[in-house]
Length: 278
Image (cartoon, rainbow, N blue to C red):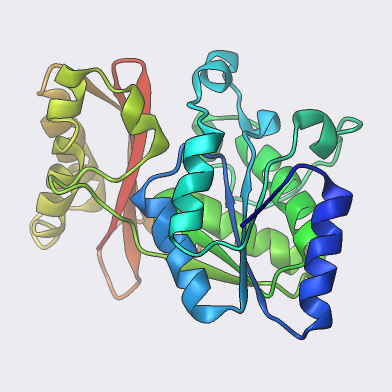
């Protein structure tokens, strides 16, 4: 497996792959890899001739400097995991390599980035669009794989690909969970034991909510979810919204439209997100 730090060298490696008519699958990550990330890599390995992964903690998508500083970094361990599941090359650029000069681009996503994560993390999705578009420009993948834990992010990236006229196919992949239901996340390793013990309440409550949609309106369900999670005394719901699957706008009632509940919860100093389809 190749570990490459420079854009030019990485582009050269990929050009060599394409010269042999090989399809390229790409998994962009911020490292601190877990089974969720590895499931994306495994799928790419199954579907593409060459699989490449980026490990880069992107500063432009953090609106909290402490979150950026505390984000776990373990590149050596990540590379060993990636090699074990058949990854062909890993791109590990520095901030200076990715941003030799500030990226001043501002993307417009209509209402997609104004709700939920976009509302609570101003500028986050613009930073995501900046770095993912840069990576797509370097890699030029046939397929790119993203986890559905970050449901809103997948919607944003699909919109960005359409706006920029890129030819990459975005492949959304299912959430991977711990045995107790907690969505796998790099931030889970930052959880103190008492918070880790109650964190599965998030998924358990969302799942229970799906069984109650015939009895309560979406706004009533959101209220019930918040009260149930906050009743742990350790978890604090930042937001929960039940939204249209495509537009991400809140729904007033459960009809024929496909809906999804998205949530962000504070477990001490660690912010966890999750979602579930209705």
